[in-house]
Length: 143
Image (cartoon, rainbow, N blue to C red; front, side):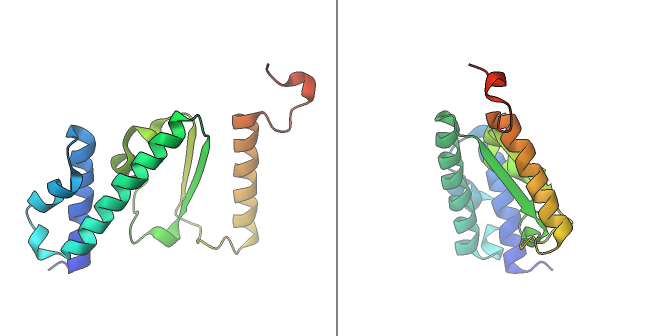
């Protein structure tokens, strides 16, 4: 038997996936799913509302041509078990070329180990160079 929180996370993910496919109100969609009443309704609705609201903020930033860099680590394994969940939850925003997203299951969220910090700094440097031309000589900068 599933726990109430696990049931709620599954309902939230199903509702968000349906929302990305067909639109509508994802919170109302969650309430209509089988098993909604067996989970923690407040928790499920909070997850769905949070993603819906963050998706709108993300889309607004992309519309303003903001470049974004995300790193998800093992520290969020309770909520994020597969990097495809980001696309399922946030839709086309995570497919936009202005959004860079890494899912490092082998890292913790504190970046305590030296090799993890090095990995993060290397990824950030690569992102800066790719997104902004950082590190290029002034005469190499596109106009």
